[in-house]
Structures are given as structure tokens and as C-alpha cells.
Image 1 (cartoon, rainbow, N blue to C red):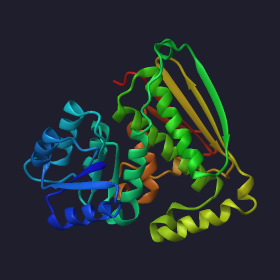
Image 2 (cartoon, one colour; image 1 turned 90 degrees about the vertical axis):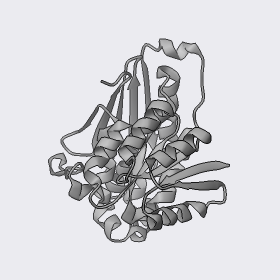
Image 3 (tube, helix red, strand yellow; image 1 turned 135 degrees about the horizontal axis):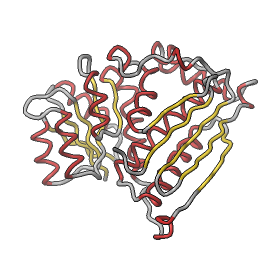
Image 4 (cartoon, one colour; image 1 turned 180 degrees about the horizontal axis):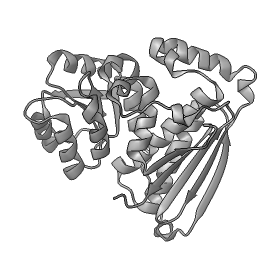
Length: 296
């Protein structure tokens, strides 16, 4: 059974988050009131996933992430960010967290985020030493607007990097998360032209409109093109959609605390935190993610 450790000094918030996660009967949820208590639990019996608040006494979420990254790098950590903690969320992601969920969106985002993290963990397969001698690899794909295909594409990239570069579970998952966000943006905002503002206003209406457009013209005929180029030392993933694009210069700053808790900033912020470079073409319908094997 999958074990999830929820860490939060607020009893109300901790019980609420644990209750949401307990709805999945395949998950065992345990709790800790702060980072020090969490480390004691981890030492005794390591959980599969940690979900933690940032602002806590004794040991805060940022310090907990650093300890987990140092001594238990195979355990992914998901942040819960509340108003006032957004400014250090970026630092926490760069320090090793796998993803984050704004506390005000726990009911709509928590389960999905944990499921995606767990799915990425389960794809950790090894291949032969031949992959360590990779000279150059180029793959191209044309994908329909299908979330399952996009998630499979992300997990495929994670497997490539794990096999070729020997990335640990947390590092490959972070790269996969950046890939997922770019692919989902290409589908929802590019091909299907569903706005982030709608998602912020009405979560259900956002997905309902996307489902409607997926089977309607002209959106049904649009595709996502993916090109993967990698060597033993670096990788570039280019994702292009058939949408109308946007002006990249108008993209809100995702590191601005005012934007961190909003849907439109989350994907871009995760991509920039987990990749070495994120660049858009002039028309905004193509993004290139670059990653070095050994990050500085």
C-alpha cells in the first residue's frame, strides 16, 4: 500500500489534507505536525510521498525538503502553499520539491498532483549500460489532444533520461513534471484555446469546455508536435501546438508572489524551476525546454 506523509503545524489544515488523500483506499495517510517530527517518522519507516506545508515551527518545509533531498532523495515532496508563503515556494522547488499545490486549491488539485507524482515513480525501469554510451538520439511525435497520450510522452522522456543519464527518481520526476506542464499547456491553452482565467473562475467549466472542444471543429484536427534531441550531456525538448499562439512578452511573471497561487503561473514556474532553459518562439505556439545532465 502507498504511504503518504502529511506535514503541517495547522491541525485543521493537516486533517483536511489527510482526509482528501484518505479518500483513495489504496493510500495509507500518516501525519506529522512539523519537519522534525516528519524526519523521525521517515527514519522509522520511509513513506512513498511527502506532502508538506512551508511555514512551520521547529523545522519548516524548506528545511525539511533539504534534509529529504540529502538523505532520502528517492522520496518526492509536494508543497502546500498558503498566502504569504509563495515567495519561498520557488526556492523550495529549486531545492528539490517535486510539485506544489496552493492550499486554496487542495480539493481540486491535491489528488491529481499526488497521482501524477506516483505514476512517475512507478515508471523507474533500468536498461543496459549501452545507454550510458549514447552519442545522439532524436525522436519526433505527433500527438492528438489526449491527456493519456501526453502523460505517456512525459513518462517516456523520464525513462530516456533515467536510462541514459542515471537520474535519481526525484530528479527525473522533476524533469517529467516540466514536460507534463508544457504538454498540457500546448493542449489546453494552445490547441483547445481554453483560458487560464476560466480555470481560476470555474475549475469544472474549464475541463468541460476542453472536453467539448476536443471532439469539435476546428480543435479536433489540431495536433501537438514533440521533438526530443539528446546526447550523453544535454537534452532539448521542443513542443509545438497548432493553436493561434500568444505574445510571449505578455506572459505574466510566474515568480511574482501574486501569480504563484494562480493557475496561469503554475505551469511556467514549474518548467523554469526544473529546467535549465525555457524559451518560446515569436508566435508563442512553440516552447523549447533544455536540460543539462549535470546541473550547476
